[in-house]
Image (tube, rainbow, N blue to C red):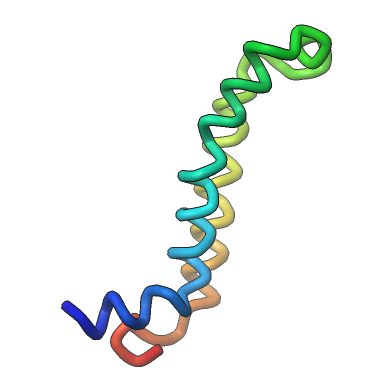
Length: 71
């Protein structure tokens, strides 16, 4: 388990998902507190953000060629 955790800091997938996890609350704040943006953002913005996350995760998974223990 410790080998996996050490290798995780060199994983693009882990970094990408960690950054999204930290940034996700800002999406809601921007949508709620900036009414000027609401006219430009589609009402289903979260659906598209979620779809983008899935697509990027799939791309990064294909890029990955080693398990975390070997990173």
